[in-house]
Structure formats: structure tokens, C-alpha cells
Amino acid sequence: MQVESPPVEKPYDKPEGERRGLVIVHTGDGKGKSTAAFGLALRAHGRGKAVKVFQFMKVPSARFGEHRMFEQLGIPIIGLGDGFSWKSQDLEHSAQLAREGWQQARAAILGGDVFMVTLDEITYPLIYGWLALEDVLATLRERPRHVHVVLTGRRCPSEIIELADTVTEMAMIKHAFQAGVPAQRGIED
Image 1 (tube, rainbow, N blue to C red):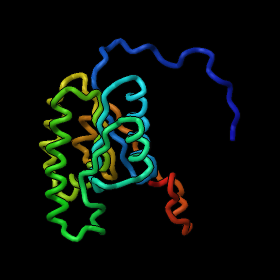
Image 2: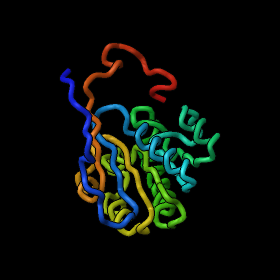
Image 3: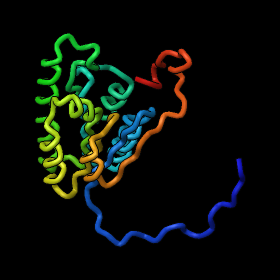
Image 4: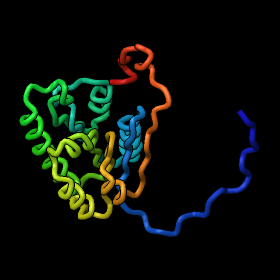
């Protein structure tokens, strides 16, 4: 590691544009996409802003750590799916759940009452063809100017990346799972 001196002058000029709702994408094969989105939801909630989280692959009865915490804080987190595709007993049913869930999420985005809408793992129903990409793009374009939308999932379609204001790609360098370590409660749930 090379040691460097901390900057003593601000490394950027203050932006001159107006504040507005952003489209933020967390994608890539690395860990942390949903975690980053949940951090944004907590930050917004901490400022007294209305937040809703829609999870496209989680079942409505899911009780992972984020569900327990968001419930305590009063942040709505809504499971829209029936689990990952390899767990599904009926993929057409999974697709129908995604379409119905999208209508709920779309209404929250366009309604304008929610400061931040998180679409967790939405890329999967998109790349499986369960949701129409053009409908998602149109909703992002037509949303009220103050509404922020955060999208997560691997292999985010390039059209969404192009439309987004901020895109972060999580790169996997190393993962404990590759060394045979199972998922840890409180870390990966």
C-alpha cells in the first residue's frame, strides 16, 4: 500500500443544477447491491422522507434481517415474488406475481407520495421477460420530478443504465461462498 497525503482543498466544484429525483442503479456480480439500496432507504427515512421497498424475488412472508428492521422503523417492505426461479414450482405463476407487483411499484412511483421507491432485484423479472422493459423505462421517465427510484440486480439492462443518473457496478473480487462458507444470517439475509 502506498501512503498519500489527504487533500487540503475541495477536489470538486459545487454543482450548480437543481435538486431533483434520481434514478440510481446498483448492479454487477458482487455482493452489496441490495445492502446499498437499503442504506439509501434508511438515510431517506432518517430525514423524515417517505420510502417504500419492493422486493421482486422475495415472498411476501419473508422475515430476513431487513424485513425485521424495516418493520420496526415503519418502512414498508413488500415481497412480490415466490423466491428465486430455481425454487419456484411454477414459473408462469412467478411471472404473474412479478407483473402484479410491478403494478404496485409503478403506482407508488407515479403517485408522487413517496420520496424514494426501491425496486430490489427488479433486473431478474426484466431479463426473464416477465416484465416489459419499455413499461419500466416509461415509468422512470414519467415519474414526478421529486421521486427517487433505486433499482438493484445483476445484469441490469443497458437501456436502464443509459437512463439512470447514478450507476454503481459491484464487482466480485472474492466471496466466502467460493471457499465453501455458507451464507451467514445477518450478513446475507
